[in-house]
Length: 167
Image (tube, rainbow, N blue to C red; front, top):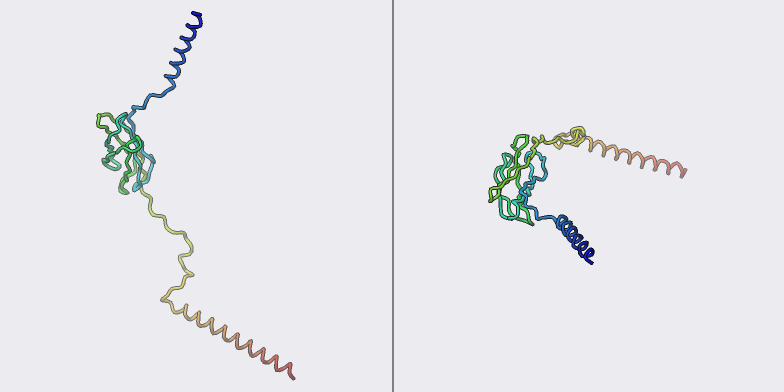
C-alpha cells in the first residue's frame, strides 16, 4: 500500500510540474512592431506595442515620423502614422518608451519616393481628331459627298436597267 501511495505522490508531482510548465505565464515583454517594416516615403505605417502588464499609453519616437502617442486597444498599444514623402531613404530606429521607463526598439526601412510613372506609349493620340483642325471637317464632308454620289449612280443604273427590260 505504501508503494502505491508513494507512486501516486510522485506521479502527481511530475504531472503537476508538467502542467505548470505547459501553462504559459502572461507575457510581460516590452516590444514595438511596425507594419509594414519597409515602405515608400509618403506611406502610412501601423504601430503595435506593449509596455508589459500595464495597458497604459506610451510614446513612440522616430526620425522617420516624429513622436506619436500609442493608446490601448485590444490588449496592445496601437497607432497609425504617416511618413512624410520628403523623408530620405534609409533605416530609421523606432523607439517605444513606456511610463515605467522601460523601452523597446525596432527598425523601419524607408525607400525613396518613386517618380510618377508615365502613361503607356500608345502613339501620343496621333489618330485622335484635333478640334481646331479644319481638315477633319473636310474629310467628313468629302465622305458624305462620295456616299451621295454612289447612291445617285446606283439609282441611275437601277432605272436604266428597268428601262432596258421594258423594251
